[in-house]
Image (cartoon, rainbow, N blue to C red; front, side, top):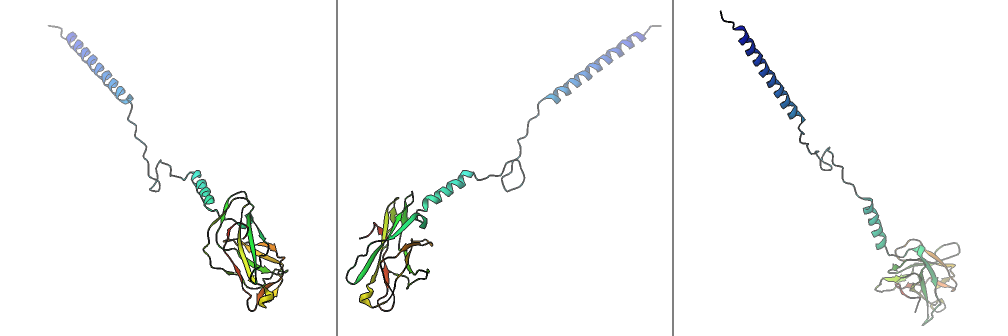
Amino acid sequence: MANTSRPVGRTALLASAVALLGLVGACGSESSTSSAPQPTQAPRTTAPGTGSGTAPAATAAPSDTAGSASASARTDGRCHTSELRAAVGRVDPGAGQRNFPIVLTNTSDRTCTLYGYPGAAFVGASGEQLGPDPERAPASPKTVTLTPGKSAWAGLSFSSPQISGARTATPAALLVTPPDEHDPIEVEWTAGEVPVGGDESSVSLTALEAGTGP
């Protein structure tokens, strides 16, 4: 009787070896696949104001605000009360009139402008106004540019009370308010009586122009 157990055992052993090699190959393939770098996904961004996301919302740079403030300061060239000195010039009599230049001088270290008519009011020692506000003489105002130390003037005129017969008072001061300002400058009044009521009592005021008077 032939012995067949040895060939069968060798066949089984070969089959087991083939199966083991296949298993090792499969494991190596999986390891190689798992170690390959995965493509990275770009982070999702969301436009500001449309929801959550990783993109920061846009903000205005601080320099933008500073630049706007500087531009505003440059365009505001008006002379302010705190930058001016007021004075009343020497009387210029003529044809029954008394004429005085009201002079505004730039005391600041910057160039500024004046345009139009100043305000003017006579006041007594206790600060009460004497007479009505002056009337504005017809004119075509022009912008007056004042570099530091330069002046502009407006003419204050009224009929001589000794001739007109108007009711009079002697002011303690003249309050002068620069155009477009609210705070007046007080100037001592030393020119005597002024008309405050009755016939021919009106006081007129001209628009500002460059210089200190006629």
